[in-house]
Structures are given as C-alpha cells and as structure tokens.
Length: 272
Image 1: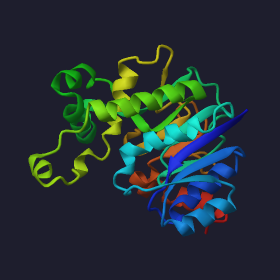
Image 2: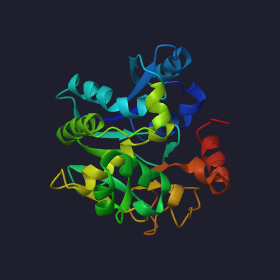
Image 3: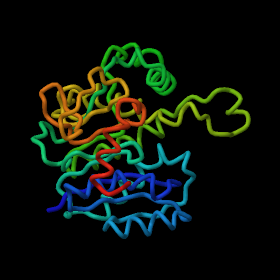
C-alpha cells in the first residue's frame, strides 16, 4: 500500500508551493494531494508536472483553514484500501529534508509539539479561550503547543481524527467579536483556531495510543519558537540528537537564520 501527503494550496501561486513539492519529490514517490481553487489554473499545471493529484473546491482561501478537514476526509473516503500512512500538513511554509514516512513513529497517530507552553503564546491562548472557554484553557494552558500544521498517522486513525476535527469545528465555533457578529463578516482572529481543536484532541487523549513528539528531538521541526537552530554541513536543520529533521515548518518566520540555507537547498533543487 502507498502513503499519501495531503495539503491545501487554494489561492497560492505555483512558485509558492514549488519548494514544498520539489523538496518532497526528492525523497518521496507516493501520492501528494492538494486542495485547489477553481481559478488556480497555473497551479494545476504545475502539480501535473510533479505528478501530484488535486481536488478542486469552491471556497474562499480565508475559509479553507477550517473547511479543509471536510475535504481531507472526502479524499480519504474516496481512496479506501489504497493508503497506509497519511500526513496532513501545511505547504507554503514547509520543506522536506527526507521522506516524511521514513521514521519509526510511536503511535497510530502522531502529533508534533512546538517549544513553549500554550499560555506563553498570545494566539494559541486566544484560540483555545474563545472556542472552549476559560475552564478548558486553564486545564491545558501549561501544556506545550501542539501544531495542527503537521499530523501523521495510520489511515484509520486519520479518518477518526478528521471526523473529530469536523465535529469540533461545529460544536465549538470561535466566538467572534461583536462587530463581526453584527455584520456577519469573518473574524480574522479565528482563522487559525483549528490549533485549539488539535490541542484539545491531543491533550484530552481522544486517541489512547497517540504520541506527542518533542520539537527539539523529534522528526519534525516547527521553528517559530524553536530554541536551538543548528545546521549540518549540508545545510540541513538538525535536532538536538544531531539528526536531520524530516520536515522543516515555519522557516519563513525565522528567515534571518534560514535564508542562506534555503538558498543553498533551492539551488540544489534547481529552483534558483
């Protein structure tokens, strides 16, 4: 059976996802699935060049953050008995240093931590407080942030995860500020509140054998809050065990430290 990477690129230009695709295709030959918009024609052509699949959806790019879980679920339901392991991830701010499935993951579903507690991040605190309320926030705010932008597990576990995420979106909507309630407009502050649902699921142990990988020793780096940025001689970001991470996420938020390394890697991939 094959593995699959599923992501969304609605409204993105082809050059915004090419680093993601080319770095992944250097190590990985199985399926890559993108959600795209109706008008993303240049992007669709680029995906075809790199043998990527796509699902066209009619939704605004600012709404896809939460709606993506519905479409991810449809993709898996349409491809039963095909895939073994599944990775859901962002794409615009991710590049790969190896095959993301080439690792001995410890759980049927794997979550990946950042480097600070929820309570030390204004955004994550707000998302949890304004979806689940004060009591849940107090209960889990001392835990390390769990990143919703990279989740990996077995096909069956990921089906369950997607169903849970869709349930959370409906049951615990982000509480909009009054001016947005009155005007029926989207509240931009709530755009990333799937982080709240992911942390709730991870820390309330909805999955008995789930595993939370540390940011500084695990296989995936979410670098916004990463305390130690260290590269090997091949410009690969390495963890505190001296091993290259499989995935580097949010590198654009630490651009001063990553710019020269990314340029080197892109040159190797013939992107510049």
